[in-house]
Length: 508
Ligand code: PHE
Image (tube, rainbow, N blue to C red):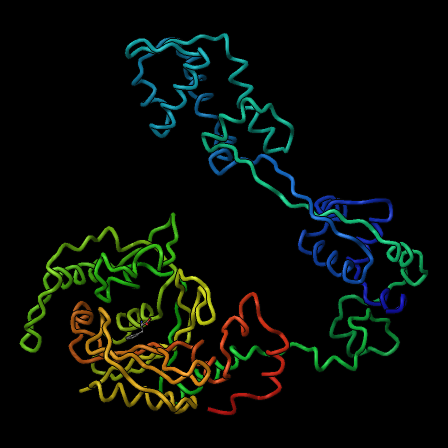
């Protein structure tokens, strides 16, 4: 590329970064501070300058100490041993239990603090009585100062720090810092008189209206190839919107929901047994730390049906699992494993409140599974979820919807096979023939919701429902064997472009 062209492509940030490197190497964080730029802007610009061969980047890993969340708390309120010592200094001799009533502190923290002070001979514990020794005062104050030093990135004495690391107050982290240096071409560019010329970097509406005579920054080298390089919609995104159109054309309304779900909506309402293997950590992504709020009345209803079923003249065989349902397991937060969780939220929110009205809902949305990635599995999968509520629905209606949908999408070679789900009876697995693999593969799952799953909502009519896997459907449509080619971290960009220009889907 010609020098002049290169200069024309540099943004203001690129120029600032380059000029700063004139006098020698700099770390990304130094550039950040000196130029008042965001880290992301610095890195973006550096990558661009690297690709134009104007600078070199070296990544350097450095370990440093950092206050943990607990450390931050102690920085504010003082270390527990410091706080206890202050109390001791004031009171000289006092009862052990006085501490508990005078200092608001977690019991374990308080005991740990007493342990530290004993070790430093700052206090003496005699039976229930504690007396203070003021000699190590400065030592204790020094410990408090260490937290400040760590916070300010100053050097600290390692002998204290080890104890703090063990207690989870300080942690050692590795930080990557990018070191930039200018190349010979970079130096040449800076010296070019063009380099200091001003041009428009951020285009406004006004600039576009009155573009004549304005000096714009260049963005690409050959404007002729712009159309082949411009952003395109990923085939998957396109496919999803076509599926949504197909569902809407069949009279379904779209459901909206969140990725994070409670175990209650993901498992309990569907009568998954509490020891069901799908709930295990190997299959489900649990989120630690927070708890979900579960609707109390519904939880009670679910517990009742789970434990002992319910009587109905129609289903008098419903006897439940005849084991205890532990409600404390219902409010864990997870990445939802299937969008059927959403379906049940809609049953609760809409269908159970309008029992006389027929309803049809769908979603094309993500579920998350803790799986090993391979050519048909990612950690997340799109499910095409559908649900129909109305009078006298049977498994024949279900089969009708399934066939109609797959036909609309253009997959005609499907067959159905009985299967088991805790929440549907009967249940049907949908299989399609893969010409690529030369065998039948599972592409979906469906069924009629068990009365046990609907009883807690007071619903007695049948509901039919399904979940189809979007990725496999897409693989079949495109004749592609590996899902990872289409999206995720390993996409094959050339393949995506080819698919885009081949207009693979047509209209559904
Ligand atoms: N939730 C099921 C799955 O993830 C699909 C399904 C939905 C089955 C509704 C039956 C009824 O595979």
